[in-house]
Amino acid sequence: IHPTAKEGSRAVAQEIAALIKAKQAAKETCVLGLATGSTPKYLYAELVRLHKEEGLSFKNVVTFNLDEYYPIEPDALQSYNRFMKEQLFKHIDIPEGNYFVPDGTLPKEKMKAYCEEYERRIESAGGIDLQVLGIGNNGHIGFNEPGASVNSHTRLVTLDNSTRLANGFEFPNMSQVPRLAITMGIGTIFKAKRVLLMAWGSHKAKIVRRAVEGHYSDQVPASLLQQHPNCRFVIDEQAAQELT
Ligand code: F6R
Image (cartoon, rainbow, N blue to C red; front, side, top):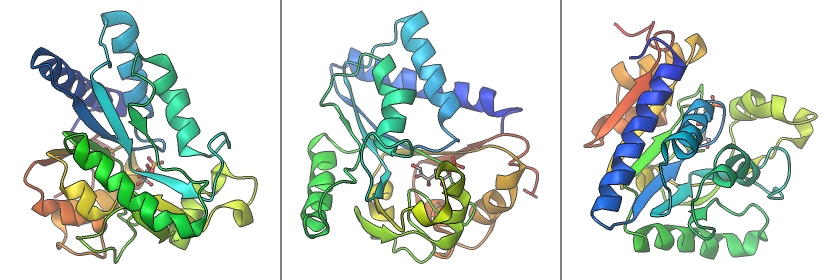
C-alpha cells in the first residue's frame, strides 16, 4: 500500500526496470504483459522518464497487451493500439515488431485462429515474465468479466453493460461503445511468472476488498488471483480503505 498512485506507480516502474536490467545482464528477453486504461498511465510516464533521463533501454523487451475493443481501427481515439503507442511505445527504444496489441480489425471468422496465434506468440517468446493488471469495478481483469473460466485463453468476449458504462466516457455516445472485445484469458494471465495488479482511488476500494479478502469466485475474476503463486496488489491508501 502506497500513499499515492504516483508513488505506487514509481515502485512498479522500478520493479519492471530491475527485471529488464537483470534480463539484459543475462542476455535474455524480458516479456511483459501490459494493460491500458487510466490505471497504468503514471507507470508508463515513469517508464518513459526512466528511458529518457536514466538510459533504461527496452531493446530486449517484448510486450503483449491484454486486450482491445472489437471491432475498432488501430488509429481510433479509443483504440488500445493507439493508447499504447501514445503512452509508451513511441517514446522508448522498443524495436518495432516487439510489441503486440490484439488486432481489432480482423473479420470474425478469422478471430479464433488469430487468438490461438496470439497465445502461441506469447509461448514462443518464452511466456510472460511480468504481467501488469488493472481491475474493473466488477472485478474484471483484462476483459474477463464475471463468470469467465479460470482456464480461458485469448478469445472474443462480450463486454458487461457495467464495463460499457464505465468506459462510455471515451466514446461520443453509449451506442458507439463496442459490445465485444478481444482479451487474454484468465488462464493466459495465470501462466505469467509474476503478476502485479494496480488499483488507485476510493472508487476501487470495494472491489479491491472483494478480490483480496472475499471468497475465491469466478464472480469476481480478480479474486481468482488468490491462487496465483506470485501475485501482488499494488494499491494506494484510498483503494485500501475498505480492507480490514
Ligand atoms: C485494460 C484492462 C482493464 C482495465 C480495467 C480498469 O487493458 O485490461 O481490465 O484494467 O477496466 O480500468 P481503469 O484503469 O481505466 O480503471
